[in-house]
Image (cartoon, rainbow, N blue to C red; front, side, top):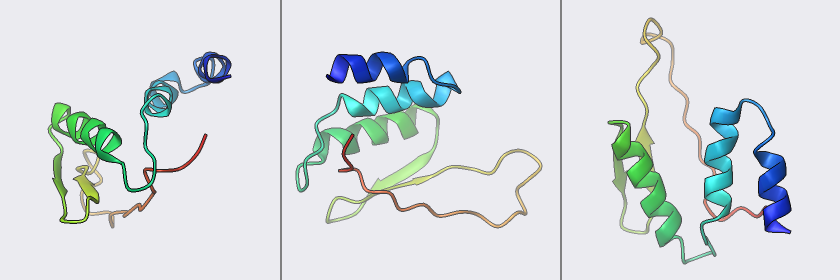
Length: 86
């Protein structure tokens, strides 16, 4: 089932976005056991030079800089959960 789902996701566009989604689907992320997904997110952020931090209860915060030329546009805060189901 997961292989079929990953095959279908690999056909979606923009492939750059959905390739990340496919990687995330392969990482175990049960509630209260989010270490692996949190580590993946931290490595993803660090690999792109984005500041990130993890608080005492395990929430990860990633700061993504504005696109060039849009620095004065108000920022966006997103609060997705890392334990969503596929």
